[in-house]
Image 1 (tube, rainbow, N blue to C red):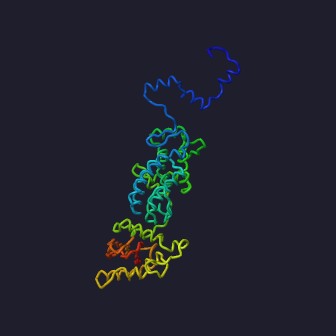
Image 2 (cartoon, rainbow, N blue to C red):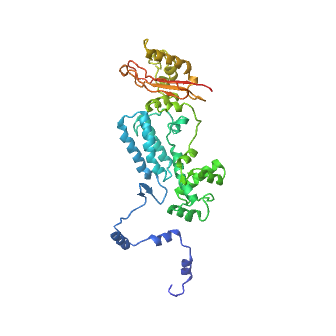
Length: 415
């Protein structure tokens, strides 16, 4: 006060604690004249939060659902482009797994994705897989959680978005623990940890959304392993030759089912992918046979023999017309076809196919999707997984029936 005495009120005002808001205002408040001068010299424009940096939204507060709109728009843009391609189920699977889930990685590795956005992405991909269109809903034949399992567990190998998001963000948690020399890691240690480790930090309500996500990942691993030292050891297993491997982290976070035998045969490289997909649906009892629509239709009889109700087991193992359609005459081809059908009806019982334990030596599949008389016999492929035995696989020929006929033969040989 220029050497002058101050009264009690002035002294109190000078000695009071300064709030964070006042500090920020004194540091960052700028006059309009100075602002215009800076704009004219630098050529910058005045921006506002939130803004986008490298395609990602940046905000001083928690991101809202609307701020993820560019992410969902990009995914839907890819899907709408593919709508007109008339792809098979297998083709749509390949696009979802290779293209879309690759696009998602950039966002999932940078931000914790809200549940609402994950559900929107799953809904768009599910609609595209089963109906071919992004925003037109069609009843799925298999639940999405089952589809996101590895193929050896009965799924299609898609990534579970929640587990994949946790796995990709786990790299940030490891970088905090390892004190990687980056600006954000130094800021986390200075602002949050303050000479403590990430394993000891308890967190508070004022933490950022990213910091809360780091603690969520830490606590999730802790709940499974039981101690912070075990958490550190677990994450150390995901680092090989100095590099963090998100795929190893994903194996930890993802849901698990029992490993089964038949996927080795279904997804063999000898079988066309679209045939493998139909075979996969058949083994999961999800083909659209008439027994699935008993509530909506009175006629559930088999369109081939008209004797029994149409079901997966009937088409595969009981229908006499399907057996007779394999081959006619005394040609070597017809005799071989009938021999295979006799083996099929002998060894391909419902109780012997599907979730077989132990070695399964021989498997073959026939896909005659939308078969017609003018298509002729269709060679599909063969697969053998035990002693050197070779089988041919034929497509059944129908007169004018639009049906999916799928044959699967499994015979166990216990060593």
